[in-house]
Image (cartoon, rainbow, N blue to C red; front, side):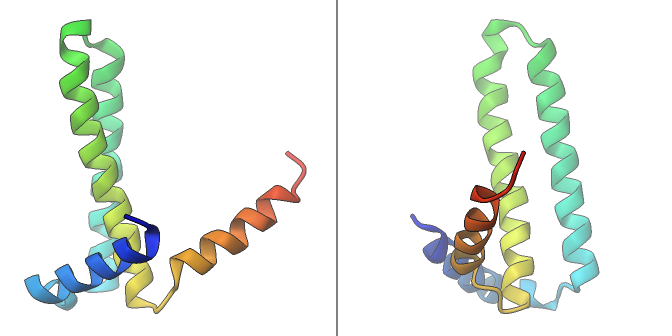
Length: 98
């Protein structure tokens, strides 16, 4: 799935589930909550034994999805074409001194 398809998927899913009624502030708080869950998973991964790491990585992947989902939902609310934004930002980054 490419970024444009994912952005449309998020748009359609939010409409279907009634998530459109969530305010920008609420969506931002959901995003921050998910970032916290990524942090929690990363901490667990650092201290886990090898037998637990596969499950933790799977959970980490799900939490990263949730972060991306919320960011895409914010973009959708403000009619931001993320494919275009990504292409523009990659060009900017390519020319930057790091």
